[in-house]
Amino acid sequence: MILVSACLAGCHCRYDGSSRGLSWIEEWVAQGRAIPVCPEQLGGLPTPRPPAQIVGGEGGDVLDGRAKVLTQEGKDVSESFVRGAEEALHFARMVGASAAVLKQRSPSCGCGAIYDGTFTGNMRPGRGVTAALLERHGIPVYSEEDESGGVFGTEDS
Ligand code: SF4
Image (cartoon, rainbow, N blue to C red; front, side):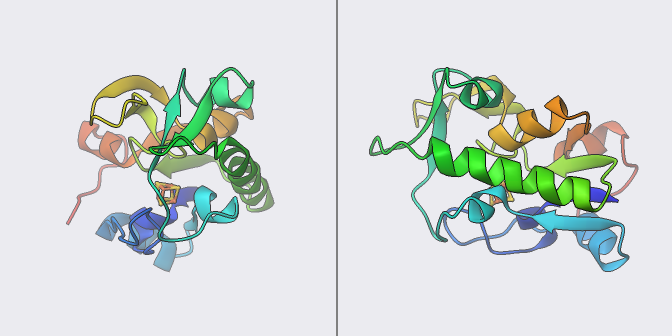
């Protein structure tokens, strides 16, 4: 079983109420091969919600208390992001997930690139909070963009 970001499975759970559905991920879910989760909703945040970015580090630093997740207005939402990551890990364990495919650039789901905390559109290397927690617990995390490199051998639509 693969854990996938719910927005990649067509759920309208992004901060602005949109989705980023990909046909191959939706097919995995329909076939019972993947389970969709949205860590930010699981952490208790509403939809829509103010956009947030990791400030002062990456997901692992948030887990260790060395960085924070802040909204553009400066509200600290780190606790919700950590709670959502823990809930996503709970689901991953419950279904025996062997890997996760998560949405690149998200402060929760990013795995390789995240926004740099300046809200200017700039990126930095790193993972989101959920991606970091899953990897800490031995669950390999890929982004939906890794498929272009042949990891999954499927096509976007
Ligand atoms: Fe998608 Fe993850 Fe953001 Fe939820 S937290 S909207 S699943 S990228």
